[in-house]
Length: 305
Ligand code: GLU
Image (cartoon, rainbow, N blue to C red; front, side):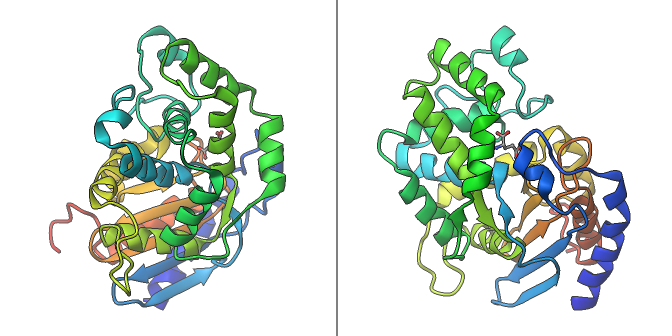
């Protein structure tokens, strides 16, 4: 396994020069684009790591998976999807064009409009501290904290997300306090994790929401089922279709360079690689996952299991 991970990294590293760190949040542009790490945590409680797996970076959009699951557990499926769809958008994650012109609902909870709507469901009853505890628990990483610098940097440059939030309010989709919903959303994006924490989250999700060692239920199993399905169809921005064909593992990426991947009943995989491709996915990380999927036969529709 270790050799396979090293080979995967070698392949992934070749693509790093073609990618760039996100810069629309100034603090993210400071990342070292040469970082690349991959961690696998298995149902047998083994951990395999290669590269920069202890480096902390912000979770960004991967937090949308946690927010969605907590909202489903807290408010139920009907409430969460009353004012939100579950379809891929085919547009950029922060687009507001179709939301304004052709649709009265955000396309799905993995784009910003959907995730801000989801945060709005939680704002009245669930505090950021509660959400931080969920994140620590689900990622099997008690050291997760909010990166204050990234949070401030994003709040100072969030005109677009603020525009989306007020558009949602104008359409009667976001009923909670707009600024509080935007703040909870942005705080969740600013949680600092490692590739290992994402592998931990993947492992819990691969185990249907139970702690892999103790069997304790950490999150509702139906919430986990819904989240994994939406990760497969919408988790990799508007590159989700090609990623599903090439890799075939429900995954979610973030502009901080992380990728969370869930191999059903087998393992969680966490990636860190801040150089992004044109779709906003870690360029090295996407190639690492494609290689691992082939080498370890992880594609969910693989001809032979
Ligand atoms: N906090 C980022 C934003 O709202 C998250 C984007 C992402 O990772 O897709 O723009």
